[in-house]
Image (cartoon, rainbow, N blue to C red; front, side, top):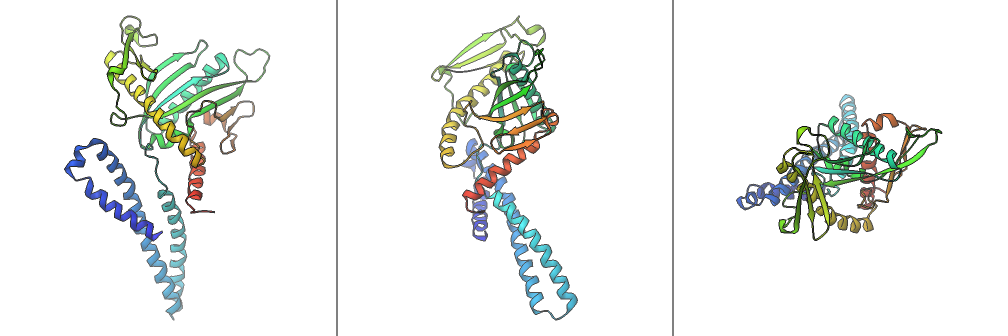
Length: 358
């Protein structure tokens, strides 16, 4: 552990020197990456200093117990040793987690896409429930939620809804939500009281910066059309909605949430950039999946990850076999327990791979 902390300290010194170099400051991509690394390393360096202090305290207490003749001093040394050992074990576990290689996308904002799957109107209503669940959770975290585009269902909810989330470590928290979510309940339209199963697909995309992926605008077809959703007098009167088609890949992104054509184009471009970036990420995730047991979906829309069963009041995450009988609170936005358990499982797997635990 001490050798690893020495390497961290060495890299921290290198990064501290690099981020003040004029050529690095001039390179926006490199500067942002190094700043992120500096922030992560700073925490590790502080923990490392505390770790070395505790080792010193433990050695000092052990020496006192061995060499001291005064019974009171020996008793005090034993108390210090017990306290230091307890802190040492806790701190060692924290450092092990911090030493796990970080996903470079973790600090990014995200674009979430929710699409109704099998189940007709009930699937659209469920997609709306998921949107409200995520919106409530994100707002409670102090993150900003901004609608990009929505296609409303005929009986409520959404056939498709796309929104952005901005804040601290958003992708790191929300990336485990990608996949197929399934609901089992009696639909409002069901007269026989039978339980139906419906599904919705959630995709969580890290929001790509301009320097992450370059888009040649000559490859993009731009169409303007009248908005069809809520928005006051601008709806159906001006061509403010924007649809972008990336012709080499056929990927489409559109936005009609804003009254301004310019703002809609800006938002649609963010989504297009993130979808193109997702193509590259999926290749990486597929490669990684062969090497490790990752909980982050690589975009496979058949990956059933969670079931929300209303008659039993339970939510089951199939990836880790976790069942919580707290459906009402979860669907109202309290998904922290699920996220914590998924993170814990993923961290444990990575520590096993690193040989830190058996």
